[in-house]
Image (cartoon, rainbow, N blue to C red; front, top):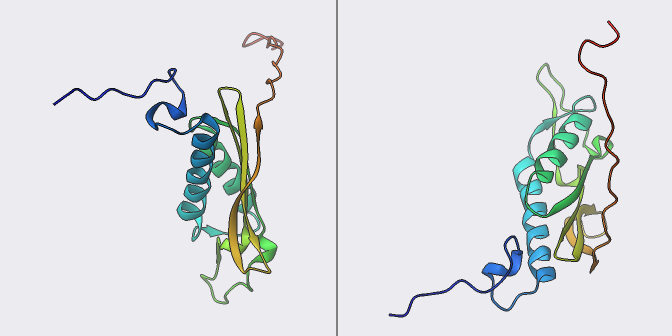
Length: 153
């Protein structure tokens, strides 16, 4: 039996393991995976007006750790929650209607943007591609020097 070879592709190329798919197509697939992960991992988490901003930041930061993610933004609309259940232990949990997320992935000169948010007319959390184009060069951040520890004491 002949030895199987990995498809040609540069190191780090998302298309390297998927013959016939372009970098853009693989980034689109990855964007869907990331949005699906956000949706299915976090819907049901206890949340209220005080914890929603921190939860949204934590979700976005976790997504930014993943390959190819250039930017991730999450917003939780607690105002879309149904009335809070009464009783001592009543709280909201994250519902599809409350979640809005956007991811931007880039690699190999390609960039894709995708988002999930609740569409009231459909009564459904729709995941969709909102952009796919050649990537823009990233702006380089200037390095800043911080004062040595203990300075100014």
